[in-house]
Image 1 (cartoon, rainbow, N blue to C red):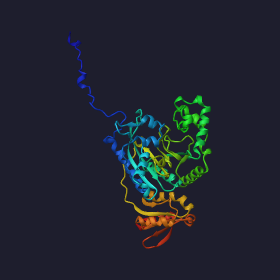
Image 2 (tube, rainbow, N blue to C red):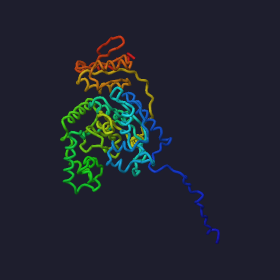
Image 3 (cartoon, helix red, strand yellow):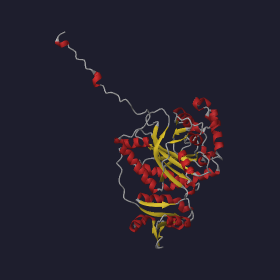
Image 4 (cartoon, rainbow, N blue to C red):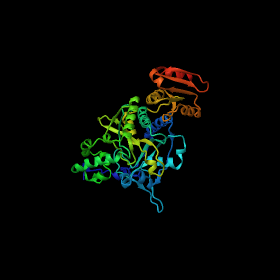
Length: 441
């Protein structure tokens, strides 16, 4: 063999990167240092908005009793049937929590939160677990941040406020083009009739329905309406309109909610196919979508009312509602849009907002928002209609400065600013309210 024919063969076994002996379990989401900044940013905004709206932080245990979710979510629900992680035990039916609303309600009942001033406002920020097929944006360990309002009055102003909280978090993160989609799924009175109409519709279109949904036609046709499969979209658009079958109470609840949303100028649209995937929802359900560069819209948040859940878990019927963000998807969108780092915000002062009368109540949310956007922290008790009770709450909280907004002030575009310590009060035009308050701090 001459010199030109010499072939040098590289020993690739020495250059090939050796795989680690242990790797993360498939489907687990791990927050690495270069990504932690985004999570810190979201947590900072969540915490600040929660503080402003007087939500208290709670973190329930990751391990729960499996029966909790069997009762809350429904034994036939896919989450219970296929997606829960069971912990091997000879004596306990333990699972890794697949969602957190049931856990929050369990804590509300277990720790006697019903004896606290109502409603109780709570928020959380933590991991959930579902045995799904991992794919882009879906993990077996996934993080959620949620806000829940439990107890008090069954007042649609809280539906509007919970949507407002979610929308403001997105706005503070720079996602100002979000839109709310909402619907009503009725209550125990009207839901049987809603399901009956849907069952008849799907039974008449049986050939168009995938076999995997056939069992739901009689048991729970709302599951079919909730389908995101392409082949179901056209059919679901033709389904009976739920709003046409609502009882008077649910119609009134929705009407008042929409009036509150109109007052706050939140962008929303009604969506007849929106029902959410968990069985405990009643009346209001909603999702918030963020537009993408490809003209698609991604849901980053969802929630609604669950007025019967405390009763399902052994407590008394209790008005309740909430929502949760899917944090992996939210952070993915923020990274794509290259958002800014968290900004330190100056310390806020505090006032108490008092409404008097139904007309003033409907306009209260927008005024409270005006104060928040101008960095003025305000406490309120929108479910209490008595001025005396609101004043007593302000006094209990040690807040000296109150804003009084009644029917006269609505028509005069003004507000009464009163110092509870000195008793001095004066009327200020709403357009001058922020500047006036800043001078008093």
